[in-house]
Length: 620
Image (cartoon, rainbow, N blue to C red; front, top):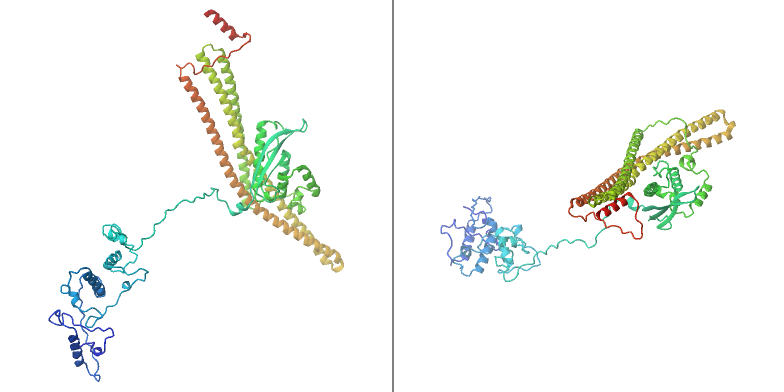
């Protein structure tokens, strides 16, 4: 059989290797240990040269059968010959008892040498890794790790990250690699545990950027006191403001105001800002306006009004609010302002600038379904709140009546305890009398808290609904002003067309009419924009009204329930204490009260004194 490599056999092998017949080709098996490789190479060369065909004849290739030879303990087959040879060489170096005669692989020439097999191609995993560490010594931990990785069929790991898995107990475990000291590479750095930051941030509720950029206001209304004589007496309040706004001279200041000043502020803000829901002040009251409960309720309502007004993004920028909060000579400043603007009020607003104060006399028909539904909703809400406030007033009146009844009951019990002769009965009666006085105080305090927590919210939102209805009225006025300007524009255009038909004889009059038409068109455009802007503003205002209503009612109901629970707990505690005293019947000192010694005072002439005197005489 012809050799397919016979054509290139005469040329020198660039790798310096030649083909060696396998054990199956020669019938003798493995060559003896003392045989030389040079004669066999010469014989192979001479035989191949004699069998070389002539160049004149066509070259003929003969396919040879491929023989697969199983390699023990080598999962890579022929590709793992270099690894197997390296493992054998390492084993021979470490074990001096293994001789050349006992190792069959040592009898064959190494790949790449003369007479040996060709060098097999290397896989990518067998390529050396570029590291900064030197080659491991055979006895080091790196050598052991490389051996284990060679057993896996992968490249050596220079960092020995998997040593813990392979050795079971770590590098210094039972494997003995690091028993005398850690000779391997550096371990991964330990992960530091997360520590809380020493700087604690303030737990403030998250707000939007617009809210954070707005100035903050905190207004306290207090120190109500009566001033003036009998004919001009009134209550004066101190208004203390703390703000971060740069528009004010100071960050903290205090002024004195009376009720009519708050009313002036409401009317002015309402006229300056059409379409805005202005928080209103409490209503006037002619009878009982100097009573302590009424004064306290009005003070709380005025304080809430100012804080809501200052928190409004539009109203807090109004110059009249600054005048009210900051002016020391308020009455003088208001009069000076009225002299500069004599038509202060409706004409000062944007509607007044159009020349229409009230608007047309025609009945307004709402064209927008959204506003119509809101108006119906507000009417129903107002009726329900008024009914709830009426029921609330009845409950407060009942609490006050119960407090008064408890006071009368206490007085009767005390009178009975003074008449009773037995101390075992007079003591409990007197203690029950004092308990009824405590119950009376609890009822009075609870009635006042109900008014200040829940009743004030009901009254505030009834007034707010009235303010919303005023905003609806302003929108209606804007609508009538818009249509009035349109009708005025139609009249001007009709006069203009009439002059145009007359020719150029009325040129001066035509120029005047043209100017009037242009002015009327400007007013129509301005009135239409005002009506549309007012509609968008009222939508946002009503949304704000709904949000604040939910928050205020939720807070008010929670405070109302908490005060009721605290009052009932106090009553239960008082009653339990009284019952514990009654159960202690054997202890006569529970209700004992030392007698009051009255010196240099003649004996009384009451029925009780006479009865006691007769008892003493009979005992003697």
